[in-house]
Length: 421
Image (tube, rainbow, N blue to C red; front, side):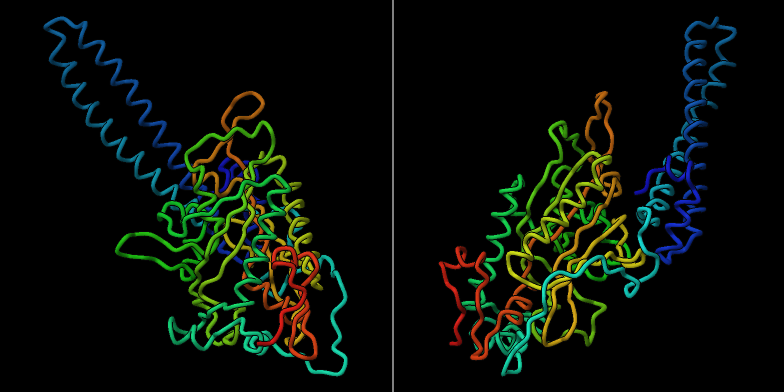
């Protein structure tokens, strides 16, 4: 949820954010009215409670002659208080609904527009050239290496499922273990998270709004399968006050992730680029909001450090406002070059969610004066199953083997090359 003080003091900024996202600006006015209505009902209820307390004292001190009239007045006040409290509760519920309808306020400088309006920040590395042979796609390489089996994945579970086998399974484990090792070296606490969460946690992170169709729900248990360990890591400190006096609190979550891919009919139907289940190591940070922008830059740098280790050509893009998701105020994606597609594809993203998620989940810290304040939350990808696509295609050789990047080899038993089976 956005800060109501910001809404009142800088309404034009909130409206401009909505416009940049392509969202309905009337939701801002609805929220303003809901906030004012809540303020009025709270004030009226407090006034009536005060009057009720006063009349109660007068009744206790009244003479027998005065008491009947005062008792009648007290009963009328009691009824008015009950009505005012009901109005207050209704206004509070309406305010929360209005707040949930307004996404996070974007940071200054975020490009306006939708999915195609991103800005390229930089490009790193040289795209591979394949002398004397036509490069295979990751599906063909995966089949040749005995690493990826999409046919049996579909037989067992349906479209967009797969088996990672042999060298493919080992390569993913090596990659994720390398990500965990880097995270530990940079001060993250490793967490293997639950992959089922309660509705208040899924909603608190912002995934039950426009992207609700992407989320799997287990109706019998009223639980949701997570699409990223960002969700349980955000819920980890729900309703808590954190000690951030030593700096940001950072976690690296390893989890399986599940996405319905409801809006991707006909897209990336081959291979493992767009699938229903994958594994990921995700960074998550709680910090003082004043430090959030610097923390965001650090997360992007850690993502680039991982990409350098696997020796991939990539670019960094800044996502446009309309493609941010409701929780993010700014997001950067790192996209690796995929040779057989002749384009870059997303491997990582990192988002600064400012205090948006913390307000929903009631996660606070104490400032230098000891006062509870809402924390900022940030997230960023360190490695996922999709990285196998880029590694196989960029490091393939003429005979169908794949050279293992030097930094990955220690996590793969020293293996230098993945050989066709």
